[in-house]
Length: 179
Image (cartoon, rainbow, N blue to C red; front, side):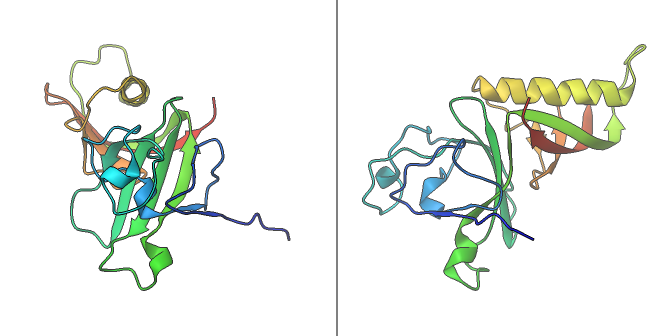
């Protein structure tokens, strides 16, 4: 059985979502540290690294509780998404566990399941259809730089709670694929 080798991208590497694969590792300095950092900012402005290269993408979701495992969702300038995870600095047993590991890549979100659906007045539409369309619109808005931190709650990698100001909410599980 042949396995595909994974790659580690160092802080001085130029990184593109079209080059990385699931399982590859990204040095912590390649991923933006907060929502307020544009993807074209230089890493040296935010980390003590000697690099004039921009971040790999724009941070659009991350888990905010202090977990031993961190999760985040990034989008690049082409609208391609990457879901990453890493051990927190205090929980990592080795330096490579602090690296962000690519868990999922793609430009097309696919809803795999939804539960705790609290949505009224759907008319003839089934709740699962509504949620699938809601997820599609959400990811399309993210591509166009909409600030949706209030819509995505309890982000935990491939699951999150989707909520709006009208009191509708649901918990979803998704995967990324190519269109």
